[in-house]
Structures are given as C-alpha cells and as structure tokens.
Image (cartoon, rainbow, N blue to C red; front, side):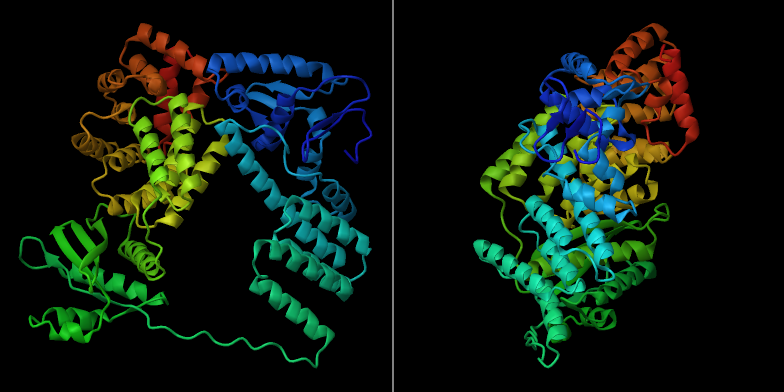
Length: 639
C-alpha cells in the first residue's frame, strides 16, 4: 500500500493481498481476521466472537481450535517486536503490523486535516472491503455487508469533504478531481450523489466543460437502467448553466394538480358496560385528534363537531361531515382505552390499539402517548392512500413460518442462526415483510447476549433491523418491541421504556411481548411489576419455550427468590443460555457444589471473562443488583 516503506504491507480494500519482501503464503482467513480486528471498537475482539465469525458452522470448541491454528500460522509474519495480532486480557487486538494496511490508513485519515494525505489515501483505495472473498456463511455474510456499507458511507462522506476542501478557493489540479471521481465510481458507479459532488467540484474549479461531461456520463449510465436523473441533479445543472448563461430563463415546473384529501372524524369515547366516561378520557381523544392536524395527506375534522355529530341518533349530522374514516374509542375499564380506525365506505376495521391510562405509566405522559398514536394513525392512513397494503409472497411467508417455528423451541446458537437464515430468505423474497426484519433483529440480539456481548456489530445490526421493521409497518408491535429490547441492552433506558409501552399498546395480548416487557421492567428495577407480567405471559403461553423460563428465572433472581429461579432454569430443555443466572442462583441458594459445576460450564462459554465482566452483561439500572450477581458468580468459583 502506498505510504509505507516497511517490507510488510497488507491490502484489504479491494482484492486482499499481502506484500512481502520474502516468500510466504498468507492464509485467506487471516485477511478476514485482520479486517475484523481493525473494524472492531477499540480494535479488539473476544476470541469467541472472532472464532464464530470465521467458522460459523463449527461448534465452539472446534472453532476456537481453528482460531489457535490460524494465529500460529500468522506468527511468522511478525517483524521484530511488531506483531500482526496481539493477545490481550479481553481477547485479540490488531497489532502494529495490522496498521500497515490500506484499511487502517483509511480509518486514520477520514477525519484528518491534511488535504494531501487524505487525497493520497483515498485515491489508493482499490475496491470494496475483502472484495472477492467467499461469504457463504450467514454470520460472515451479514457482517461483511454491514461493514462494507459503513465503510462506503465513510468513504463518500470523506470524499465529499475532500472535494470541498480542495476546490473551496477554486485552484486545484483537475487531475486530482478526476482521480477521486474514478475511485468513487469504481466503488459504486450508479450513485447519483457522487456525480453531483464531482460536478460541483468541477464547477468550483472553473471547468464548466468537465462538469457537463460528468453529467453526460451520468445520463449514459442511467439509460442502462431506463431511469432519468434525480430532481436534485437537474436543479444543480440548471443553477450551473444559469451562471454560465444568465440571460436564459429557468425552467418553470408546472404545479401538480391538487387531489382531495381523505377526512378523518374522531368519535367520543364510550364505556364498554355503560355509565359515564371520565372527562379525562374525552380530553385524551381530543388531544389525539389535535395532534393529527400537522399531517398533510389527510384532514382531521374538529373534535367539537365530530363529537356533536355522534350524539345525533338520525345520523344526518354525521353524514354532513363527509368523513372517509372514523376513529372509535371504547373505555374497557378505568385504566384501559381501545381505539379503532374504521373505513366508512366498507365498515372495515383497518387498525386498532389499546392504551393504558393509569397513573403508573408515568414514563408515557398524555401528550407523548397521544402523539405516538397520532403518528401511527397517520402512517396507516397514508399507506392506505398510496395502496401499499398487499399480501406477502407465498414463499416468503413459508420461510417466515419456518424461522418462527425454530425460535419456538430450545434456544441455542445453531438454531438462532438457522432461524435467521430463514428470515433473511423471507426478506430477500419480500422486502416489505416487517415481521421478518424484526425477527432478524431478535436473533441478532439473542446471539449477541449468548456470545457475551463482545461483538457490538451484532447489536448495531439488530438496531438497524428493528428500525427497518418499524419503518415498514409502524402499526405492528413487534418492530417497536425489538427496538425496545435493543435500547435496553444499549443502556438507553428511557427509549426502551417508551418503546415497550408503545409495543404493548399495539399488541396487548402478545405473550412474547409481555415476556420481554417483564424482563425489561426487572432491569428497570420494577421487579414486582415484572413478575406480574411474566405470569400474564405464562397464562397466555403455559407450555412456553425455553426463553420464557430463562426470563422468569432472571426476574425471580432479582426478587431474591433463588429457589424459584433454579426451578425455572430446570424447566428449560437446554439450560446453556441461562447458565449465568443458574450459576448465581445456585450459589446464593447455598448449593455451592452445583454452583461450581455450573460455573465451570459458564467459564467455558465465556473464556477469559471475569465474574465482573459477565455480571456486567445484564443492563440493570440498579448498581447493587450487578454487585450481588458478581458476588454470586465469585462464590461459584469465577474470578
């Protein structure tokens, strides 16, 4: 790689290559390991995370053995005191030799001020990360996709900044602009933003002809796909041409024809068993209606009129409102309110939600909750207007069902990965399947937890998949549920509490969601409320899969009912995922012999991790809870 005078350099951006002054064969897995370490936070990975990334299909013991062999094959490449990969207390780290790579150089100069250095490094990038490397394993494939996307975002942002810095005052060799453009288009030749930033750079440098040539090149590329340039590109060219020929009048775009917007009427809440409706409930419905006025794709009738029209038994007043949709609300009891969106023409129920209005939900103030419901209603109506409601592809649905069936049994890494593969196939066949995206997030989060929280990429990907599920279907509780779970393990407790409340409002009778909410409440320090929700989830799913008993055991532990925690762990078909809580519960219940036996198994799953580090995986707001857990693990023999 350019910029290094040492005998050893390594290229990871483009086709991987190792440059040596002597003969030697660099193993293919070595390129992947070096790249993974350079891209990991702190440039450190646990041995377990590295082994499972490289040998996903192997069991843990065999994967760790393969990793040891790979490390021994990489040792001869060391030069003096400079190693390629170094062992640390937490796992493996990128050594000084790994920094002699194009990837390391790129990451180091992205935010640098030296224009010449940035230009040298960015021009030298040969292609995508690990280009041409076989990515047939699910875990590695998803990691590679995520890292390539992240590096591309960094590259394009750095290139845009560099072009701006190079041409801010006009003077700059045009060959430098052309070289950067060539590198950028080699990475992604149909990225229209790249053409725009290069066109702008040529314009700032005073070469209008080069800007026109770049625009022509874009048009030729887009013709291959049968599309036209984006509005932003056309606007840019109009501005540049107007500066070159000020006498020309700009194009006048005809204003699009206005279309009638659907009208929504909110009806006053009614009680399910007769009687009076509290004034507060009526005020809440009015607040929801008023929150909707900011949306432009439909209109909301004033609640004063729609409430008054509902009192007319003849229906004539309501007909005069000319409403396309109505929102009905039913007060189920003093603390629960159900809202339903109905299409007037067909009387079809399009969407419903149940919200809790009791004072205990302090984290969801009336105004916040009303805006959440308003946003969900708006999204649903907008989707109906643009006809996005469709049935899913049959094959995609079959893969979704297969993955969900796998998650319904015991919980271990091979099953999680097979289930994720099924969900990924569903998404490949039907990109609009929100449930499959949420389930992918679920498997990623569970895998992150079972691997000891040492691979942050899993949690980042889980967050992205959960947010994608919400974007695809905001009215489905499962996307909000997974956003809440990921936020919990990222220690974003406020977001987690808010998202759990919203998810439960959208799916109040989901046993899975109730279970996850119970687990979260325990981490929030509300163990009593957590146990009640856990019991509700078991009432809905009495023959529950392993993950239920795992969560219940964790809640029982926080309630200091260690015998119950052990009993629930014993109900699991495979207690390996719950080894942390089982070990701690056995220790604090006084069964030290069993606790030490479980602790030995636990240490095998988390090699090199201390009791403090393992206890830190639990995202508890209460510091004392983590200290108690750590103390219990030490009683079981962990250091």
